[in-house]
Image 1 (cartoon, rainbow, N blue to C red):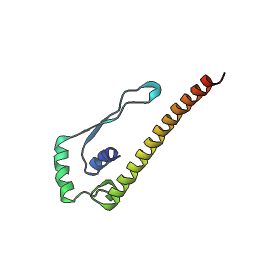
Image 2: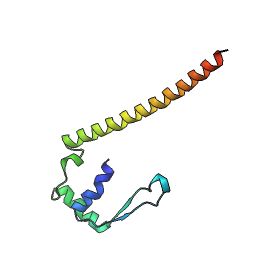
Image 3: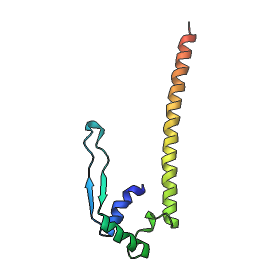
Length: 107
């Protein structure tokens, strides 16, 4: 989630960003987008961020209560979805095994 905020934060600091879109993967969409930041701009922007001269929304930062809360709920959502997906796969496998046992036990 924070990976998406980095290019936006760089643009707020007037860092030159070159993007390279991923190659087409046909029906599977496209590959990930790569970002290339200008080295001198990054050095300048680092100092400006550290000195607080560039405004970064508090939801993007993990040193604020709002940012930590957003990060927590994002992780809860991702881990919850993964748990449901794994549970569905386990239930499907157990259902298939139960069906096979039932078919083999019926004469």
